[in-house]
Amino acid sequence: MTNKNNEMKRQPVKINLVTEITGEQEEKVAQFFDGSVYEDEENLYLRYNEYINGNEVRTTIKLAAEQALIIRRGAINMNLPIIPETTAVGTYETSQGKMRMVTKRTLIHRKQVSDRIYQIEIRYELYSEDEQYRMGVFKMKYRIEEEEKNEH
Image 1 (cartoon, rainbow, N blue to C red):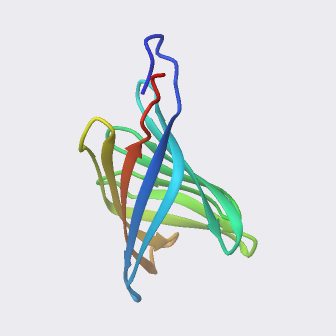
Image 2: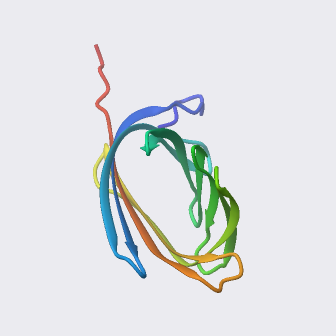
């Protein structure tokens, strides 16, 4: 995804995201997005836009070898670090207010399926800032397919 001059080039992709949340309530949602992906020397960046209750949320997943950062901007503003074997503190903000959240016991896995298809799995437990309330276990499975390049 980087060219010979090592410049970042965004590659259009089709994204299939399956999110499973387990806790007090069980939820499984499949979503499809058009987005883009690009890499620098240390990170992969996956970008796409979601619509939540009719409001746009721009999402960026910054994926390094051993950690991830979920960044959302728009109707929801969120910075959520995912660092395996570590407790990490992030923020979540809506029009109702801002709160700090804690992630624990995480997993990040990236797998190349073919030349144009790869998968990313991010799994974490989410807690309130004081760790008194467990919001649930979140499992996000991304299937990312690069669009074919026209070589005409």
